[in-house]
Each structure stands twice: as C-alpha cells, then as structure tokens.
Amino acid sequence: MKLSHLPLRWSIGGFILNSGLTKRDLTPEMAKGLHAMAAGAIPPLGKIEPEQFGKYLAAGELALGVALMAPFVPSAVAGLALTAFGAGLVALYVKTPGMHEPGSLKPTQQGTGIAKDVWLVGAGLTLLLDGLTDDD
Image (cartoon, rainbow, N blue to C red):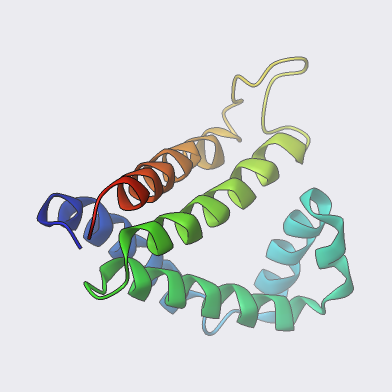
C-alpha cells in the first residue's frame, strides 16, 4: 500500500467495517427492509432469504473494510472491490423510486443519504487505476 493511499483506505475501510459490525445482529424486520430495497434494485437478490442476505451483507462489508485497511492487500484489488460495492449502492439509488427526482439524477431528501455513495465508486476507481499503473 502506498503511504498516500493510507488516509483514503483507512477512513473508508473503517467506515465500512463499522457498518458490517452493526449488521451482524440485524433483527428480522431490519433484514427484511434491507433485503427488499436491495432486491428492488438488483432482482436476483430476491432469491435469497432476507436474514441470509443480511448475513451476507454484513460479511461482505466486514471483508471489504478489512481489505481496505490491510496494507498487504494491493490497492488495485481493494479498489476493484470498493468500486463493485459502490456501484451496487449507486444502482440501489438509481433504481429505487423516490430516491431521485423524476427524469433526473438529482437526489430527493430521501435519496441524499444513498446518492452520496457515488464517492465510493470514485475512490475505488482511483485506487484501482493507481494500483494498475504503479507498483504498490
């Protein structure tokens, strides 16, 4: 890991790691809500049971957070994983009704919390491109 990547990887990694930790003990109702929103944006997720989806989501966030913070994980690998995760959140934003104004990508009040996740895609692409063009 480049020293210049440390602030980016640790700040985002810590945030995502914490998110995964909080999802380890989702109530069935919380799992159903997260699952419904995700399945609405990415229909194949509808085939997974809500509680299982919650466990997969928590595990994925934990793994991504650790990968971002671990200095032995190449930036290109961490960046690719972060880009995929961020792209999933952006898809959720774009495909969920009420998140953005009709005919526009401008977020509604309800969508602002998810629309801001576009920065994860930008950070992931930065790590990926930098990792592919330089030695870590």
